[in-house]
Structure formats: structure tokens, C-alpha cells
Image 1 (cartoon, helix red, strand yellow):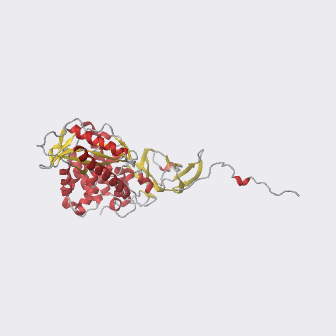
Image 2: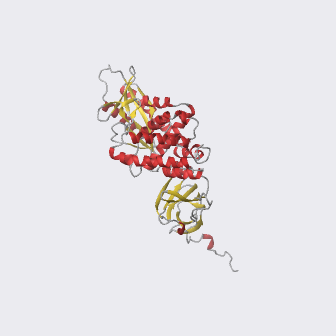
Image 3: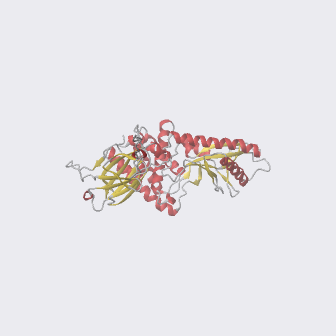
Length: 467
């Protein structure tokens, strides 16, 4: 059993899979919207253009590997394919550009009648139209010609060209790659890799691997380790998959489509590849050190290098590095002072140490290491916010991380009700040196205004009169 197994997919309140997978409320909203879009197109397009039309959900939602946006500026991506049916022998069939225009017109009509739609992107993309919804969500609608006699599918491009494309074949390949509990574990492994990509390529977006590339890599690695992986916990299985993927990609860049060997799914440019390989090497280093970790806390801290604020840490306020021979702590833990600023103008409302038991929304917090002499001269200090609770989930603001050489202070803003953490991690030569977890409990409170006006009842007037 892996040391961090319970933090990956256990029964804890906070696990990696819970933090990266959509919530039940989010899944319901996505499902309602794509169903409404599909129903609209299936009713309107045949009536207006006399061709049978079907839709097919595809992409990460269909695969069961969708992850939530990990930054508030990102969106869920759901793909709904639109299929026009006719045989190749029919005369006067529509062109690709015509099909795209028909679908775009209907999406514009849908957008005008749906209050949850914020935009129908115009002009549309080369290979799909896009409808943008509230709550960080968009639906892409690729358009196809489907020959019902041969089951051949062709993608309609905006440039009036056809492309042979059959997403259904690739989905069937994935579905048949594993079954039962193994298929569910494979889906989780794909989500972990997608979460790694989501937080590791902010500074190199051109190097970020696509969802389908990671899905195929993880699936083929999982198949290649089938006997070894049976009964493994998620963290051990992920380590095995990472090793397999690393060996494969450092040997050869190309990743052929398993259902169409002529297509290379690795579309990262040569320049982008130079940014991808060092990050993959760093992921392998994390996996190997997590494998060698001796307990849950140390394994989780190693994994947090790859997953950042997405990786939950054990429920402890402090972690210290202990010398194996003497049993003594290598360093004194940092003490964290937290000043709460609020009001208008801003003023200090409270000062706490190593915990914020209660604070209102819309306050400024200043975290400061009060014993800086315990931080080595060349140590890096990481300040990682891990948000929890329904309000943070609703906008997919799960946290963020800042780091710097002896960065002794950090400033944050309270925004979501819930119990959150500010984790102060001291690293020396890239290794964890010490950790202080600062719980921050944000509540629905209000602070009195500074120098508020006197209430009316302080102005007394006697109603007695002299006779």
C-alpha cells in the first residue's frame, strides 16, 4: 500500500481525486446544458434542412476523465459532435462550410434564448463552433457527415474541407482497454496526469500535453503493466505509469493514434518539446522520491511538488524533518504571525499565531515568519493556499502557490467561507526542510466600522414639562 493512498482516493474529506474531479452539482449543470443544446439541434436542424441529425457526446466527459478548471480563469470543455446523415450516392449534398453555417446559426439562436449562455464565439473555430456558458464552462460542437450505410465519418471544417475523423473508434478502444475496477482506476490515473499538466505548464503553455495524448499514454502504460498493477493503490499505480511514460517519450516523441496509426497524437512542437521533457523528468523525480518516502506526510509533501495546491496534505499543523540517528528535529519550526486587516480605511483587526480561528470575508491577511533566524540563508520558502468548501468549489478556486528565496511574508485576501490552509514550506536544495500548516477559518462575519456614527437613540430629549 502506498503511503499517500488515502490522500489520492481514500475516504478522507479532501483527496486528490475529489479536488480535481467535478462536484455533483457541477456535473448536473454540465449535463443539463449539453442535453439542452443537443435537443435543440436535433429538433431544429432536420426541420430546417431535411437531413437526419444525431449527436454524440465525446471527449473527456464521455471518457469519464474530465477534470475541473484548476484556475478561476479556465473553463470546463465538453464536446458534443453533430452528425448529418446521408449516403455518398445522394445528389446535391451540402458542403462542409454549409453544415458549419447551419449549426452556427442554430447555436446563435440557442444563445439568445438561454440565460446561462454568455457567448457564442464568432467567427467559429476551424474544426468546431463554441458556446460559452456561465460557471466556467463551454461546449464545442464539431460537425460531421455520417454515412449510415458504411458508418464512415468525416469532419466538416470551416475552410470548406473534409477530414476523416472518427472519435467513436478511439473511445471504444479506451472503453475496451480495461473493465470494472481497473477501468475506474485508469480513469483516475488519467485525471491525475491531467491535473499535473494543468498546474505545471502555466509558464510554458506551448509545451502542455493535450488531454487525448495523456489519455492514450496512460492507457497504453496501464495495459503494459496490467499484471503488476492488479490490486495496486492509486499512488503506486501512478508511479508505475509515470515510469513507463517517461521511458517511452524520452526514447521517441511520436505517439500514434491506436486506431489510426497514420495520425500522431503528439502535436507539441519541437520548441514546445524542449519545455515538456524537463517537466516530465521532474515528474519522474517526484514519483521516485514519493515511492521512497517513509510516511504519509513526507509522501504527500513530495507529491505536492507535482500537484501544487491540488494535493491535499495530512491533517496536521506542522511537519518537521527528524535526524534518523538522533531523533532530533533538523530545524526549529517557523512560527507564523497572521495580521488581519479590514474596514475602510484598512486597520489591524486582530493578530494571531499559527492559526486564524475566525475571520470575515473581504479581509487582508499578512502572514509573517516571526523567527526568521531558523530559515537557512539559501532556503526557498513556499506559501501555498489550499482552499476548501462549497464557495471555493463553485468557482474552481482551489488555491495557488508562491515561492521565493527566504520569502518571509505573504499577503492574501479572504473570499470564501470555509476552513482553508496556508501552508508554509521551507525547502533547502530542493528538499523539504520544514512545514507549518496555518488553518484559516473564514466565516460569515461583519466587523463594525471604524468610528461609526452615533445611533439615533443617543440623542435624548426629555418630554417632561414644568407646570
